[in-house]
Image 1 (cartoon, rainbow, N blue to C red):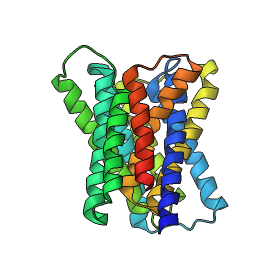
Image 2: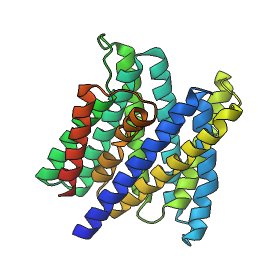
Image 3: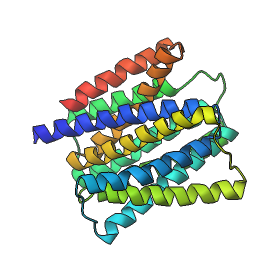
Length: 281
């Protein structure tokens, strides 16, 4: 049991690392082209890679209900991104993103407690440190109070992302890559429809294509590692650890783009590292 839990921790951290690198690459690419275009291309890469992984690992086609959970995961994930981007466009970007991330962590934790029981006191303490860490790392100084737009879009995006995690957990026990393929297809359909309706279709610039592909590869890896982590252990552990991805993104920005971390963000990094230790106990 201990070996399985340790595997879940390792896979959860691998998910955070992969998603963090993917978000860094995606954010870098979004400065040169539309953010929606970046997200759409990452879905296409998943549609290509996940079936290949399914064949490589000889994964059988799962029952219909698992594929439905996969489609729901794609819908919730894509809808969450749309809500997040709309919120960041109309509200304060750092507040919207931070609140959405915290809400997205809380929902699977509650769901896991109801379905898998209350975790140990060490893991609960680790969860608290993780919440503090993520908030400290992502939250920026805005010098302004919250307004209703920050709250409503954060709430919607956070709930949708939380349902995304839960959907993956519901299909990962029997299959991984075929449901993830379906999730990418449903996300692609939803995002394409949204971009057509809003007339937000832009061809990526040639100097951003390689970075977009890199973002798609790591985003795909993050989803796969998360699904494997939720299969190997508890959903709350997989969710909390994978949600440490902003720490990876911020540290990459610090190292590669020479961005400076505030004292509060360093405290967040220390809190996140403490969370990993506590959750691993």
